[in-house]
Length: 465
Ligand code: AMP
Ligand code: ZN
Image 1 (cartoon, rainbow, N blue to C red):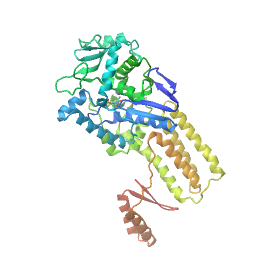
Image 2: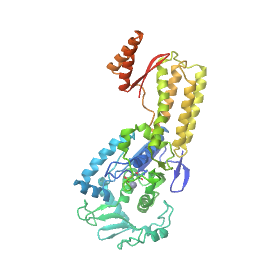
Image 3: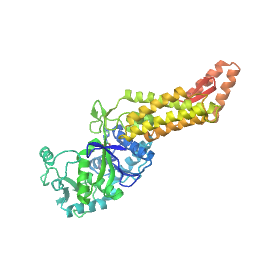
Image 4: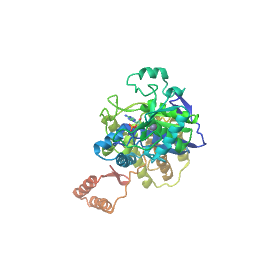
């Protein structure tokens, strides 16, 4: 498998630290509000990366944090007149509702920054001991000049960065590029005891610390949205490698933004839609198909038209599933014949192509095209004369290729409850009796319940809409 590594700016063969295991850390949300559909893209992308590794037989330790202490958390909690802890609890709960709604698998662990204060203090102490950090009036700063490779992730040189940072220099810092790893308490702020007085951790240190404590000194993959490359991930590299003297992460993955009118969707620009709003109108299959139809390193514009396009594309896929589910009931032939066996070889070529695309830096866009080609082929070649065995094979294959993307797992069949079952029977009888008015009325009643009937030479078919 090949992964584009931000650190080296090239695609590299993925070699895990432990055979067939992936230790992966993804920067999660700051839990001060509902997350928007831009954040959701990042979460869906790395959920897909994780699912695909699992599909290829890896065991994945997937850590995604909750940032539950920072300026945004404090401001919002003050505004709502609740504690920062209460605010965090509330929006973590809301996060799970929306993430489950988007069919995002639960992480192995979702650590909260405030659960790691003791470990963060230890981290900062070690940085001071090693001469990489210094204290000024209760604040502790990381000394970027001391870390010779500072700038290597974002491909910038420290002296160039220093020039850019001269405005707004905090006088207490030794260098404009130094950043806080510990912040002293300001009035009305939550704080913890530390060797430097009451205070709280800086943002960057929390991820370095939780990755270290949960996954070890060197991890396989560190991931997040592209806005995190600098300064967040650059600073994480500096702190972590200063502490351990080892490579922090072997692969750095960054996903591109969701934009609106070519501008990043963000809370501060007020140009966002929450995931919850979008989930009210569209199924998660539609949203995931929309997001995964572009490569994860390509920005994606958000528009109603594109979502509607994804919706009709998905309908084509589910129509094919529906057709196969019906054929499975209607076919009279159990076992495959020689032709079917030859056809399986043809089907498996689609699977190989799909794997080839996904192995190439998770090219979901091309992998989805392969699924569409597969479905076209099946639609032409599989019919009521095909064996149940081959029909089942097709259905399983479509679902198999959909599962790393988190789509196409639903059945178009629902269990008809008794009332609906009786209505279908009653309509059959009405038709037999040539009572067309009654038959039409029952059909309309079923439609209002979301059930569509189709009369076919094989009998009455129904599906959910
Ligand atoms: P935040 O809660 O702002 O720290 O963001 C959580 C995650 O969403 C981070 O990995 C961000 O990089 C990512 N993110 C923020 N805005 C967008 C966007 N418009 N499109 C894609 N990802 C985003
Ligand atoms: Zn982070």
